[in-house]
Each structure stands twice: as C-alpha cells, then as structure tokens.
View (cartoon, helix red, strand yellow):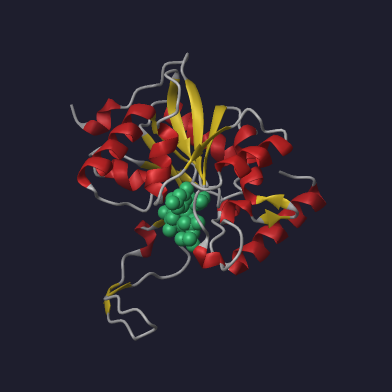
Length: 251
Ligand SMILES: Nc1ccn([C@@H]2O[C@H](COP(=O)(O)OP(=O)(O)OP(=O)(O)O)[C@@H](O)[C@H]2O)c(=O)n1
Ligand SMILES: C[C@](O)(CO)[C@H](O)COP(=O)(O)O
C-alpha cells in the first residue's frame, strides 16, 4: 500500500490541538522584544494568534512554545488576556526544535495537530477550520497556500548584494507560497520530527519534513490575511488589516 493511500478519517473521539511556535527572536523585524510579544493595535501578536486558534470550531487545546528564557512572561501575558487554558512550554534553538517541544506535551487523545506560527496573527478562522477539517476527513498532511504572484528565479546565491547568476525560472503555475496553520495526523507529524531529530536534516516548514517521509502532503487555499509578519513593512500591513476589520466589524 502506498503512503498516499493510508489516509483515513480520524477517530471521531480524538481531539485537535494547535502547537504555536512563538520562540523566535524576530531578527528580520529589527531590534526590540521577541517578535511574538510585539504588539499590533496594542495587543501582543501571540495573543492575536491564540485567539485566532481558539475561535476555530475544531480546536480544543492550544500549546504555545515560548522563548526559552521567557516562558514565565508568556504565561503571565496569556493569563492577563484570560487565556489561562493555554499550555505554555519553553522553546528551542530552531523552529523545528520548538515544534518538537510542543508536540512532546500533547495528551494521548489528540489525533490531529495543527502547527501555526505566532508570526501569522491574522489568519482567518475559516482557513484554520478548513485545514483541520481536511485532516479529520482523512488527509494525513494539509497546508494552506496561495499561488505566487511574482515570477521566481533560481540563482547561485552570492550574498552581500552581489549579482547572482540565474540558474532557472520555475513554471509559476506550479508554485504555491505556503502558510500556516499546517495540519497533520498526529502520528505522521511525530514520525517526521523524530526522523529529523535522528538524521539532522532541517526543513523550513513541518510539511517539508513530512514530505521526506514519503507521506502525501496536499495544499488547500490559503488566505492573504494569513501572511507572516517578518519585516517592518509587514507590521504596517497588519495594522491596516486590523483597522479594516474594526471598520467592518469582521474577524
Ligand atoms: N527557535 C525558534 C524560531 C522560530 N520560532 C517561531 O517560528 C515562527 C516562524 O518563524 P519566523 O517568522 O522565522 O520567526 P523568527 O525566527 O522569530 O524570525 P527571524 O528569522 O527574523 O528571527 C515564529 O512564530 C517564531 O516565533 C520558534 O518557535 N522557535
Ligand atoms: C512555516 C512557514 O511559515 C511556512 O511558510 C515558513 O517556512 C517559516 O519560515 P521562517 O523562515 O521560519 O519564517
């Protein structure tokens, strides 16, 4: 039987958890507090992200992976925002270490796991529910994504702003820019993380680790508002999205 055909609907008794890696520094955003603790319209980005997850019908447990030296501060912050039901654990050196530490504290009855960047605080609830539903219906690994709008070049990286020779132009119609939450059957994600820890291969997203185990990953439509706050201009965009939501009473 191929790995692709092992998808089966999750046990209806099992629950869905979200792991939110929030332990990054936010170097590309510039100096300041760890990125997840920086505010958007006066509220920490992490709180926006947790609330987005808690609004989802499917989600019954949220685990936040905090900066390793800031778990107590994050605990207090979540308590202040009436989010005392959220579990907090200290994170690791890399995003994948942090996700693995979050997975380690999930109770046995969790069958579906979503992994969502704290740095994507404005993801709409429908996107979260669509990913969770696809996993619960039997897909072992699901990622939300959007078609890319720029033409993408492959290059010989040089760094330091030096001209970089182009080595190819992939067919844009086959490219997707991947977002979070990414959703997985729990055992599929756990196996992928165990493999990475054992063999030391990195990946920039969880689905990338799962792909290497031979399990079929599928893409579902993402959302423009699920963008990742990475650079200073993203903060401006995020404030504009929140202002538009306030004006239209939308979430
Ligand atoms: N050791 C790490 C590194 C990253 N993350 C989390 O992974 C998500 C996506 O990472 P990214 O946007 O790259 O965040 P940073 O690593 O903080 O950004 P930068 O690379 O600019 O420092 C973020 O929610 C971040 O907090 C994490 O939990 N643990
Ligand atoms: C997981 C992710 O958000 C999917 O696009 C992305 O790969 C994280 O990358 P980063 O370099 O850690 O921001």
